[in-house]
Image 1 (cartoon, one colour):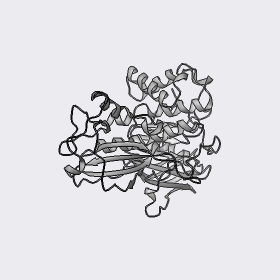
Image 2 (cartoon, one colour):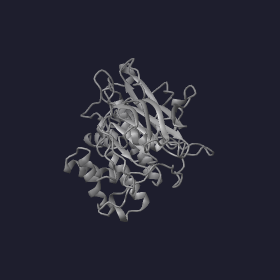
Image 3 (cartoon, rainbow, N blue to C red):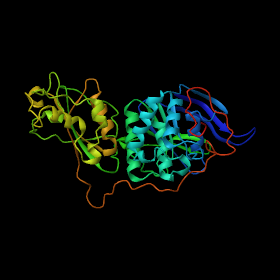
Image 4 (tube, helix red, strand yellow):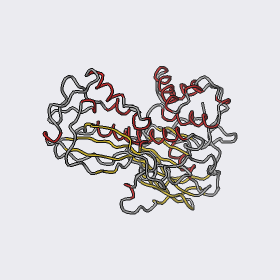
Length: 394
């Protein structure tokens, strides 16, 4: 997707909110937009999402897009599930698929108990969960988030962090604004600042892309074919850790099996990417379903492999990653070419006293922006093309 000379102003002869914006958005990238209140961040996001049309310049190559506005309209005459099903249909899903996706995402955000509640009766936090859910239903190619974490509880914020990592790992582009500068710190591929109506890149120091994100972390041990290089741009900027000189032998319960590498015996199965991506072990402490299933199929006692990774000459790595990005990293490893095979996934010890995880976001700090979708007096024409459905215009 490309923006060339894009500008936006409201009304004939009105002042330019944005002018001369040139930007390229590549797949599998996470972009942060920064700027002071009223600088035009929300206007830029509306242009990216296709909710607004540029007053000057061109936007081309927009993929299927979803958008979480700064303010979510709750006056619509729907229940939470009814609204999400309707939005899923707008995104192109069939009714059954839309209902299934809505129920799954409501469960992930801990809001399944409010599926039958009218939107007008939802709390602010639950309304925000619905707003986020409608944007994630159909796995958009471009996800635009305007202060989407504001109002969410700590668990839901972590779930949104995870969803963002999954979308990027799945080939999507995510552009976000958040008042907390630590939000997804170290995971973004680039940052831009809006000031004086212009968009400029934020300078990065060498290696800043690899700065570890705050919060609980997970240790992932994986094996690849001899001489294999790790895939580039892995989700969550994982940190490599030393590999012990003498490694434990791989077990079938850890989901390791590969032709030419460590081969599991006695009917053990490989942990596939979809199963591991759904695993909740890193955040809950439970055994990931994919690994538990392997143990079940071997009678509860995992059988040892016929040979170890060291015997086969496989490359072994140990990666530390923020728990919110662990599932996306697992999927990226398992679906790489050639694929990597997961030996184990385990939580890392909490950081020493004095090193704090990312704190809960604040309820305040919203930016000043033009009227949002569904607000009285909005009246701005939507852009043409593959724009995001306006969450308030249903």
